[in-house]
Amino acid sequence: MPDYEIYALKYAGPFVRTGAHLMWYQDWDKIEKIYYYFWCIKGASETVIVDAGVTPQLAMERELDGYVNPVEVLSRININADEVRHVVVTHMHFDHAGGVSLFPRATFYVQEDEYRFWLGDPVAGRPPFKYVSDAASIAYLASVEGTDRLVLLEGDQQILPGIQCLLSPGHTVALQTVAVNTDRGTAILGSDCAHVFRNYTEDWPSCLIVDLVGWMKTYDKLRERVSSPDLLFPGHDRLLLENYPEVAKDITRLV
Ligand SMILES: [Zn+2]
View 1 (cartoon, rainbow, N blue to C red):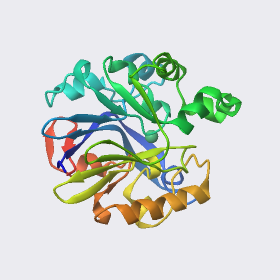
View 2: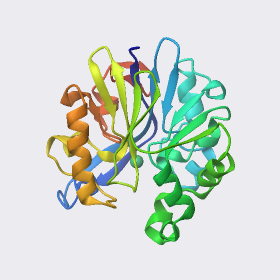
View 3: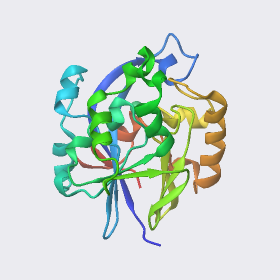
View 4: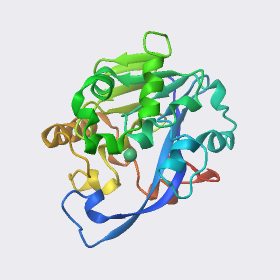
């Protein structure tokens, strides 16, 4: 089984959030700093990008402070976005799926239930869902449906040797996390199953809950699967940038 290295790439921020955004219904009076990230899983022969950041156009519309085009961030570790073959979309919120068009030759891996919700469920067009999604990236993914550039996954599925997508609902209908074989065992890129490490350590979710019961069961599943608790990574914690060795500007090595 191949071993992979995992990198966190910051593409926007810092943003200031109230504590209650990061720890659901707690910490109303606290303020914390977060970042927007995507991730890179690098093996001897394969590179997999996890989430896509956002396009310059979307960054402008959303007025994202500190935005750098993900294509530019990737070039700092000698990865050409044009040549990326595999992109896992953990969920279809704008800050994770908004940059899919930046990877013109990639195959995208999305959970089928997540994809169908955003494309087909009328609820996805209601204000709270519209607010967190991006029509252009949804349309882009729709345009590649039926080709080999879109793989719709049904539950837990290995996409390459040593890399498995895990159905992890709670934050969205069918968010997926990514279990990765590393030299320290199985690490999990958990995306927004947790915004910050504290969500895992205190067994308490963050915000935008579509299924609280499902979310808690997802925590059980991820803890059972990961080789050690410190290999379970959240989606927006400033510590991903601040507590790990920096390999290039805005890029740290997690494992
Ligand atoms: Zn997010």
